[in-house]
Length: 523
Image 1 (spheres, rainbow, N blue to C red):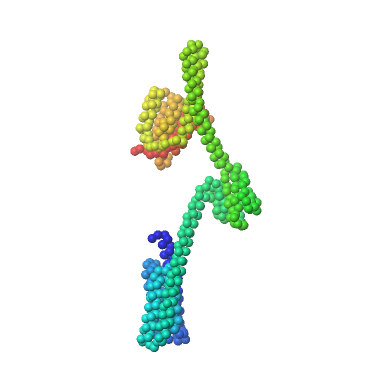
Image 2 (spheres, helix red, strand yellow; image 1 turned 90 degrees about the horizontal axis):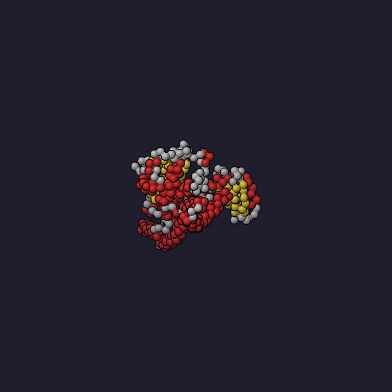
């Protein structure tokens, strides 16, 4: 069943319960009138015994119908039809026992038809009108056959039957309009609830703090970010002054003006907030206060500046490579053609420094490629075997000085970036480690959390001095005369581009670097 139908059916059952309570009230009224007042009222004047019995049965049926509705609300149309049929039968019999339509009970049949049409929301409306009309005609016909009857009574019965159908048609039109309005209201209510939930989630996840303050200065809504910026823990309905005295004072001044206000609000913690006040649309209404952390704004501005500076640096580095190549080539030619030792020494100095500048330019260009990471699933041992073959071509001692652990993992990493990270880490390790076999160890282990693996590069060298541990990942910091100081900085940036993390662990004597990345241990 669709949600709209389920909601509508629930409203049907609720109306039917009210209708059953009305039936029980009418039945009790008839029974009490017959038992207490007797002949003093014009009920049961023609056949008191029949009236009393029908009234008692009518009360029992009304109780049974109400209990059935409360215990087993199923098959709505069937229950409504049975109840209406019982109403028509009981009221017709009591009308017959009271002298016919002149007793006034026929009006209650009109109420039953109208109530059934409204409760059933327009379903089977004409059937109920026809059933009541047939019951009226049968009662009048039986009266004419068994007792004295005025022919004019048939005319009145016909008029009442016409009233049944007219009431049924009007009730059906009203019921259809009620159903349409109720369905539309429920649909609008669901849409409004969905919109409210979405708005609450958006406000809760906003980077800025949001407060809704009423005309009395009470906070009706605040998101978690506002609690963090104001360094408070408060529930809705708290006084604004209890959260921030400075904000409450300024809000009192702002509320006298119907314009948007923006001011800076320093906090005791040293944080500077940019406060934006939006007045209420109506006098005494709810006003909005936005809180923005200026430190975050300044950080974003700094990131934008660094990004622009990075693009500028990359472009400059690219433009510098061509003049460097020309200078290096010219220095080589001078060294070959000039036999003067002094000039050859000067040419070598020029050549060595151009090579160093070229390495620096290459590192800067490599840093600019961090945003183009394309992580893939790599098998550690298979990747490492190819990497070590190339490393041995540059440093023959790596064949015996590098020890590879037996552990194997699969990790998510950009292939080119992982190559660059290992090249920097192993290059530093081989430079500072001893000449002994296995002086540098490579190990793959399971991570501290699920779906994480760790790569460890450990050497037996002197390690990193305590005073320099916080500087090893800073750009242009180096302890090697021919280094550029960008190796570890670039390695960490490339790790972050693939969702990994590069750390220097504090377990002397040697240096111990760890790369934590997404992956699984191979069994």
